[in-house]
Amino acid sequence: MNQKNERLITLEEFIISAQNRFPGATGELSQLLRDIGLAAKIISREVNKAGITNILGFEGSENVHGERVKKLDVFSNEQMISALSRSNNVCMIISEESDGIIRLKSSSGKYIVYTDPLDGSSNIDVNVSIGTIFSVYVRKSHRADYPTIDDAIQDGLSQVAAGYVIYGSSTMLAYTTGLGVSTFTLDPSIGEFFLADQDVKIPKMGPFYSINEGSYNSWEQGLKKYVKYCQEEDKETMRPYSARYIGSMVADVHRILLKGGIFIYPRSKSYPNGKLRLMYECNPLAFIIEQAGGKASDGLKRILEVKPTDIHQRCPIFIGSKENVEMAEKFLKEYKEVPVS
Ligand code: AHG
Ligand code: MN
Ligand code: MN
Image 1 (cartoon, rainbow, N blue to C red):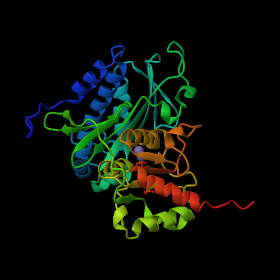
Image 2 (image 1 turned 90 degrees about the horizontal axis):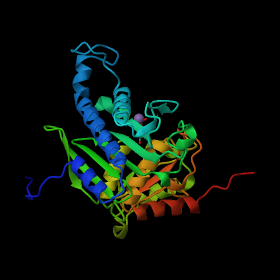
Image 3 (image 1 turned 180 degrees about the horizontal axis):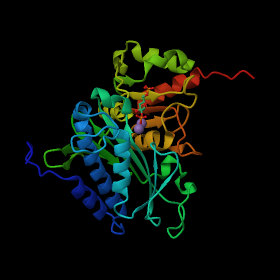
Image 4 (image 1 turned 120 degrees about the vertical axis):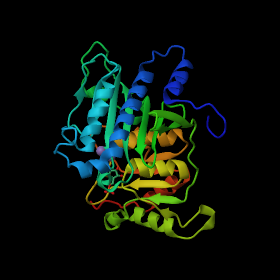
């Protein structure tokens, strides 16, 4: 029993009870989500061992068990693929770690999953929070047909589920199927995720801005002005905002989801289309934040409405509390640079 004397609800129980509310549901999506839960637990265990692995052997060397030590992003990719191959529900995976599509043996599976198996890899060596992101679509072609890349090119509005796992001071999983956002915390001692919140709502406005300010000189004018606005004093709008930037999108957006504010990865001279990937970074987190009552924009339009043309395409992102994102959009519009013809 917890302190409030309430019965704890496991991730499995929660998924099943959500499925039971839809009499026609086949259980395939529920199984897929449970499979992701399993991958999350295995990755979490490995993440927690990463520090000790560094002492016992570097990537490519052998660990104490005589096994090859793998890079955590390669390991996480393998775990996601293996978990999603368990139940014949997924026909194809697109991963940040693989150039092309990954066809699974179950080519009649109903779902396509995009994943960033290990987000924030530059933070692994310094013991800072990292994550896993996933996004689920129903294939466009008939299940008897062989799935192709065309099945995977769908806009973010077509996602049927999306979520992330954050490996932080505790491991948490957040997901949505379009009916709000639920979060779960892993109890590592028994290997079980327990429900933390079943309807997370992001504050309408928040006091944090999260952006890599080292790139300031290569930003467009409107963004420079917006960040200066964030730093000005005005009690009514909670300014000056505090700057928070971890360098793991999952961790930065998780803070914004719980506390409010804005996370930005803009276009810049080095990244003319932004750095983050539309299909497995921007879309899933946009789905989560919108379901929590927030907003996600590429600066001009809703992220979920961006028409994809490539599985690995990049996209600028402004995501978080509704009022913060709308204000950023206003600055971009006002100072929009007219291209010289
Ligand atoms: P990944 O580790 O999957 O390549 O993603 C890293 C991403 C994202 O998590 C983070 O927001 C961003 O890169 C940080 O980039 P900068 O170092 O350019 O700020
Ligand atoms: Mn990433
Ligand atoms: Mn990654």
